[in-house]
Length: 547
Ligand code: VG1
Ligand code: CO
Image (cartoon, rainbow, N blue to C red):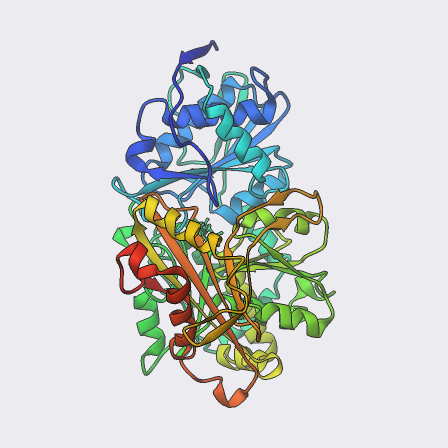
């Protein structure tokens, strides 16, 4: 088979953000756009002009519009690169955590995940590509930055001229000298889950009439949840809703939060609500947990999992440590302190957990953005979190609400909310952040909106394993009691800028634990406005989304 070399020119802006390169589908549909990025990636990972003999690549995506086209492009380019084997999920489908599991279990040198995750899909929606390394986790910044640099100098790429590989049935095909294996998208992942959780106990829970509503939001989590929850664990048919992955997610926005998953919330607040509700996002790495009449904040979910982890077979021996992204609430820090284990604070984005997990410093990790995971793979994992909760409910006999309130009773409640201002002109977003940064030296000691600032900084992180430093990861404005407001710009959006304002206040007094978060946090919202002049910079009076 002849490898062909196609001349090309660099595209602007192929810089991966918080989680891979995300752009409008129409941008990815431009001739050479995806090819350039993949060539740059291979050039960085293997060396310019170097082949990848003996190596295995994993390829799959969340099934959104353009997934199939992109898979075929990547298969041809991987064959031109001389990979020995490419494992591709059936139908081109692999959830992000499943891709991580496949990379690890098959000793792959890496994997390409096609997803824009929680971003909307369809012909007018978003597409994305991300590279994961041999530990199964997102490539660290030194790789993503090198890929970006390479995209700016690229002059050609190599590929094959071959017909498409049939993806809909499992099988083995030859593409040049490369063996392409279309594999079961679920089997490896399911095997990892079986090794962690007490499936018998969860089966008994369902057999006893326990009711779950799992909203897969017409995204890739559906088939996984169907096989495991309805199939293996015996939950009644219909437990998993919106279970069929659709190219446009049925018009839903597959970002599981109370705003986008309002239908699930309505079911959970109804008179005859199920015992537990859950939802996952476009690529099934996020999860939202809802109790009957009780919404669980992601930060509280992480804290509850950490507090009760030893009830679950996979974590019986205890946790080496926990880790959370900086804006995530300090609820898990308090659990860690009580358990006497270390707690790490990282920048936003799952790639920062990889080294801690590899080094055995952390076992559980989480982010405020509905992401939780553990050392079982190197990605956050939506269905894993749901199974973890089911296992805990089965083991303790408690309800979702009781488990969370139990943690509050011991450690106090961290009232928490994130306010997003979406679609701001990029210059305005940058100007707001620059303004904030210029105030860092003078903020301490100032009283704004009636609150006195104790300290302020721009979060910087030194990786405790490899010493790499990540600067400018979010501006923190903190009060003497630890209450805080954090500001950062999103790194996953595809249109303009999104300002994220994170608000947190710890409340030790149990008599105040049932107050509404937005009420408790109102003074911090006023502080945020006083410090950042959000109205002036964004022209918005209210956030577009509050979670
Ligand atoms: C957001 C979240 C972050 C998460 C990232 C990827 O990033 O805040 O916590 O890791 O999305 O999630 P940003 O830069 O927009 O704030 V996913 O499920 O879209 O891969
Ligand atoms: Co996701």
